[in-house]
Image 1 (cartoon, rainbow, N blue to C red):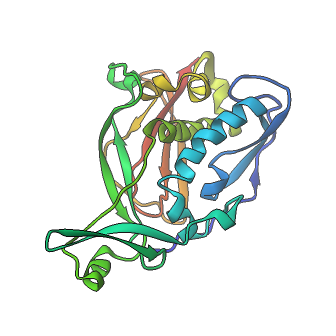
Image 2 (cartoon, one colour):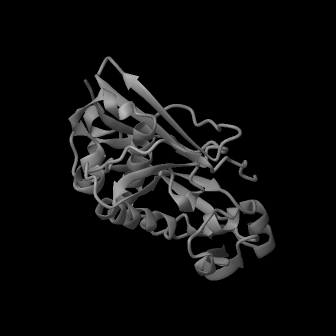
Amino acid sequence: MEPPLQNLATRWEPLGYCIYCGSVDALTDEHIVPFGLGGPGVLPASSCRTCATETGRFEQDVLRGPFWALRAHLGLKSRRPNDAPTEQTLVVVRGGQEEAVSLSLNEHPLCLNFLQFAMPGRLSGRSVKGITILGHFLYNFGRPMADVMKDAGADDLKFSQAWKPISFARMIAKIGWSMACAERHHLKLKPNDTVARIIVDEPDQIGDWVGSFTGDLEAVSGTLHEIRIREDRDRNFMLAEVQLFSYTNTPRYGVILGSLR
């Protein structure tokens, strides 16, 4: 399935301070969704260099980790396109014997295991260190697996992906928080109780703020990624729902943005 086109020119009015630490010095532009995922909008002059370095570091764990081959296959933007992979390895199983083979991205099934997290600790009432993984959802973004198996005479295919779950969860939180700030929803929150400090300074607490949302998996037509901000007045929280590659029925991740005033 081809991803839909998306307007990449959206620019919000600058805040004039870092959305993570509040600094007003050496501000840089902040992509709501990372540039390497075809980020659909920019919040100008809204991240200091120190925080931008930190968010860029954990984003790269994802963009040049499990998402790298898929990004190249979909033609998403890259600051170093010449570094992008042109083929990907998988393990073909025939009669109980395993063989590692490399396929071009057009021939590869490009399967991606989206992590399934537990509910955010602040919603479940169970605080955790790091983040709890319950399982994963397998998505076939490239050539159909059945076709690859048939051509290879395979009984099964195996894949290996190097995930850094905390980096992925921090990236999800960063996307939700950036969107909330771009639309000025963060002004409704208590400034001393937001996810901002967790994103850049306290990653061991990320599982209290980020998790998977339950419910049916649904595609959102006409979008590459979907971000929704809503208020939970019963629990006095503001939440973000983040769905990457939402033109397929990928899972939604929830971010507690902070406590409402």
